[in-house]
Image (cartoon, rainbow, N blue to C red; front, side):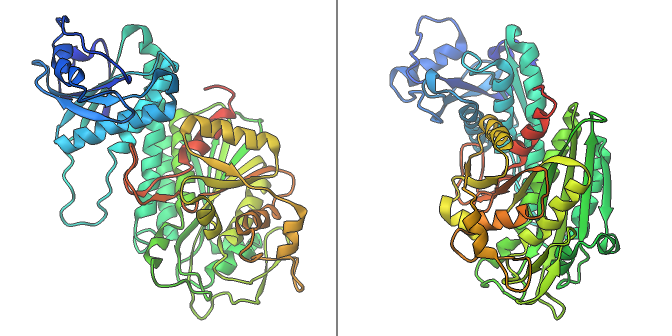
Length: 491
């Protein structure tokens, strides 16, 4: 889908369909000479359309410039948010897709409550995310006719709206890339494939990139990542990407769990649903998507990404419960469950990010079933060792519409993962599983401010939503990108 920008009135735009958001309670204007408003008279008079949030209807005919007009309810003006504007645009685009139109023009709305830049960014994100489709390896992919969408702005809002559109396109594209990577079968997205994708993203967006191989990890004593990798024939990769936009300034790090397939290792998962474990690298996909956004927008900030990529498999060389391994910080870990592998690979990843100079670290991982059970896919959970960084996360989430709920960390949780034979265990048991999982990773962070995002349960959705179809969501891509952009202290 190609996005275009136009200045003027919606009725001046030639398209197969117009998309127009209307507030709840809008009334018809039968005396109007505007063809578009005349076409709306019947549906508004008969209350076939009331403007309730995400309500849609189609009006025919309009005029020579458009064959039909899609009306989308915006709800009450006082309730408008950026997230709702994403949904309004998404609902309009999803309707356009169902109608099979090839082009659509949508009028910038919501700028009377939100600033034009934010309204435009939200609408563009909603449109691009709603237009996403992944057919994978089908021999007959689904035909998507909608190829061109134009955002139309009035002259007075045009400059800010166009800037918002640029940011929105980048945010949505990064998120859609993360969705595609998460959905790819594990035999088509190995750690090596993921590293090669990162190299291509870096080359296309002016980022530095370096990929550490097994030998490099051995030199740096990354025993936690190597321990997980030893059960797979696929070689592990530690992917490092950099955008150094403020030489001499502090470094902000994004870290991703890149388990390209998780069998559970010797602590084998149940067979039912194991095919979904191709998506256990959704955190890494989100980090890669966020770095694409950073590369496109080029903030005056230093942003690095560290992605720990491997499979977790149960061959004869795999880790066993009871084994003891040692991470690059020198801390030893007793293996209680080989299915608690995400925290192991992230242990070396966050330690390496700090070694590279990061003062703030945010990781994203499909880490625990405990998080998915606690929040039911509505919220992601997180822990934070720093109040200020927690506030940065919530400020970014307010912009993106992604939901994160802070979980407590307390010294008593540490008792759950004490070990008799090592510094710590890699599992504290079922109780408090989300907290202890994140706290185990935090054991490998020395002085940096740290936030751990557990996106288990939110990395995919089982139902269609206004701008997000069933499947992988790219969760945390936009929030991490917003946090990274905020390091530049400009929007």
